[in-house]
Image (cartoon, rainbow, N blue to C red; front, side, top):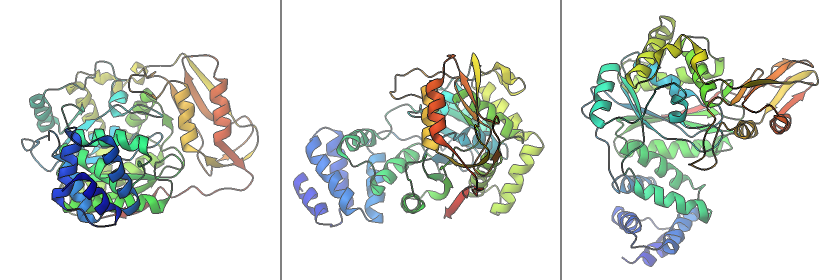
Length: 433
C-alpha cells in the first residue's frame, strides 16, 4: 500500500493493520518516507486517534526499529519505573535502592534531562566518582550481586521514536495520547523490563494538566503494556506543587538519602512507598500490596535501604561515604533566603514556574549540550496549606552567583498566600491496574 493510502485511511478514521504500521515505521526510519507524508499521518492520528490494537502495534514497531536489551541473565522479575516528569521528582533515586533492598532487581537505563533539573544520570553524577558507562556484562553482574545498577542510555534503542518525536515537536502533534503512550512504552519495552510501574503526573508542573488527561494517558499505556505481555500498572500523582522539598541535582541526592533514612518529606516518602509497593508486588516478592509496603517500611527502619544505596554508589565507582557526610555533595557558594512578606496560608506553589526559577540558577538545561550547575537549586520550606508569617523563610536559594533578583521575582510570582487555609491537593488521584 502506498503511503498516501495509509494517510487517507487514517484520515477517514479507519484502523491501520499491524503490517501497515510496520510499513510506515520501517520506511520512515530508513528515510524512504519523506517528512511531509509522515507529518500528514501523524496529524491524522492526532485527530482520529488509534485503537488499543493500533497503539500496541505502533509501540512494537518502534521497539523493533532498533536494538533491544536482553536482561534474561538477571535473576528474577525485572520491574522498571517510569515517571512522566515534573519538578522535584526524586523518586528514581529512592525507589531503586529501596525496592532492591527487599530483593527486587532494578536494572535501569536513564537519560540526561532537559528542563527544570537534570535527569537521574545528572543527579547521580553529583556524587564524586559515580559513573554510568558500564559494559553489558558488568551491568548484569552488578544487578545480580547488588540487585541494582543504573546506566546511561546507549546503543540504538527505538530510533523510530527519536525520529518521530523530533517531527512531532515541530508539527503540533506532541500532545496526542496514542503517540505519547507508544513513545514512552516503546523505550520501556526495548530496555528489557518484565513489568512496568508508571507514575503519570498531573497538574501545573506536568505535561498532562488535568486528572482526566492523565487518566487517559495512563489507561492507554497500561493497555499497551498488558497487550504486549508486560505486566503494567499506573499511579496518577499530583504535580500541581513540587514533589518533596528539593529542586536541583545535588540537593535532590541529599533529599533521597534523607528519605532512605526515614527522614524525608512526607509527600515524597508516601509516593515512593506507593510506587514501590506495586513494584515489589509485580516482582512476586510479596503476596499483597499491603505486605509489600510493610517490607519497604521495614527496609527503611532497619537501615537496609540506605545500606543498599551506599553499595549501589560504590559498585559504580562513587564515593559511598557521601551517605554519612552530605557535605561531600557539591555545595553552592551562596544560600539566600526568600521570605514571606505577609501572613496567611500557602494557597499555591506553581510547580512549573518554580522549576523555571531553578533553571535560572543553572539547575537544568534547555539544550542537550548545556552544562548543569550540580550545586544549584531550591529548597522549599513551606507547602500548600502551611501557615506563614512575615519573615518566615519560604525557599532557600542555592546559587553560585550572589545576585539572584531574577530568581526571587520568579518565586514571588509562583508562590501565593491567602487569608483562608487551602487544603493540600491529593498526592495520588488514582491507580490504574
